[in-house]
Image (tube, rainbow, N blue to C red):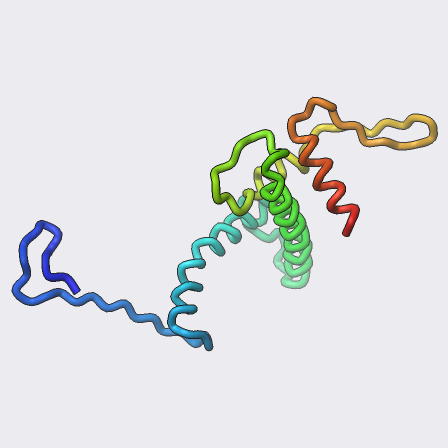
Length: 152
């Protein structure tokens, strides 16, 4: 209810604004409003799937092929999200400072800093070893995440 307009003029009759939501969700009104406010976060996840992973258009006209590609993309997406959450939890090891309250890393950052980390395979003494430059600023985070994956 407004009794004064935006220019400061007092109104003779108050203006009443009502927001209505129609939903088939079996939740309380407060919970539905809370879910609605979180839809922006879901839009960000959807955008990351499309742009950061390059899944804007499906290559096939066959539904079954596209379904398989989407399932593969989903597995890759969830793996990258898991890695990103691990990065956020390791605040002390991160070479760049993140804003207070950061709860996730965008997929493009996970891909750029962890997945595309430069290294080489070396064969020596009958073993194959993956070598990463010791002064790589993301190496401590990589090692922590690698240890975490080995525990799974």
